[in-house]
Image (cartoon, rainbow, N blue to C red; front, top):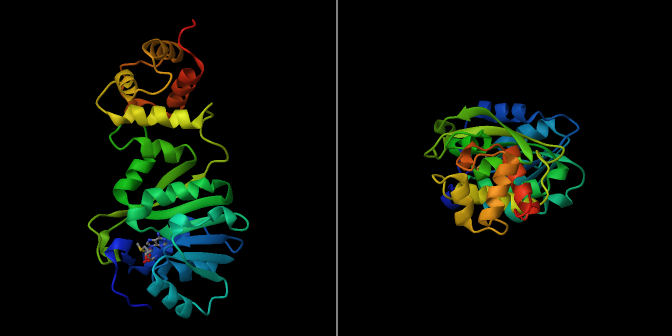
Amino acid sequence: MIYVRPKKSLGQHFLTDTNIARDIVEAANITGDDAVVEIGPGNGILTRLLAERAKKVIAIEIDERLADGLKNDLAGFKNIELLHADALQFPFEKIEGRFKVAANLPYYITTPIIFHLLESRDKIVSMTLMMQKEVAERIAAKPGGKDYGVLSIAVQFYTEPLINFIVPSSAFYPKPKVESAVVSFSILKKRRVDVLDEGFFFKVVRAAFSQRRKTLRNALKAANLPKTTDDALDSAFTKTGIDPKRRGETLSIAEFAKLADQLATGSGLSG
Ligand code: SAM
């Protein structure tokens, strides 16, 4: 066991309940053929359990005190590669072969690390990540509620997220202010919906949610995107059959795709 003074700035809330660590490894569905990447091994509570099951564990820790301590502590495990590095900068695409990801994430990097990992999604079989419950709910949200937004769509565009279980703050030292949730993400073989221009699709999605209380049409108009003249918008709503008075939070990903594709292709001037 490594004893260090926890650094708040690095999101250090160490899991103290081994049963929960076991439940995370269980949810990650690790077999003897798997390579597993762990973000932020901390004092190694998950790392040990992962190494007992996996073929190989690559653990990436930014805090030198912990990385050094772990190198000693885990020296007995020949299948652990311990790296002292910033996971946000780590070139995951360079890891040989496909891998699973398992982690109790530092809260401050939850969203950026998920997007960074998703850039290498071709290499990733699945991800099992503990995060703030509130972020987990936004990630897994379906259309129609206040949790559904850009984050839900961006993650569900590439993955199928599932909230496995909730973890009380009493399971950590020091105790965080909020509850946590363990989310598993299976990576979709291809994007959830086909879109003509992914960049433009996300611009439309962001615009629709940038002013949540506005109707879809007014929100898109206010965002001043390319290809959104009055004529283009009218035509796109007519052709897709999407009511312009709806709010962005009611649209499914497929409906956003239809609308974005229609705006991207139609000048809106032709019938
Ligand atoms: N896995 C341990 C556990 O479950 O108790 C520690 C989890 S703690 C919530 C997050 C860990 O991530 C800490 O050890 C912290 O030092 C590390 N960390 C924070 N930022 C990081 C980054 N950018 N890259 C890699 N590790 C990071």
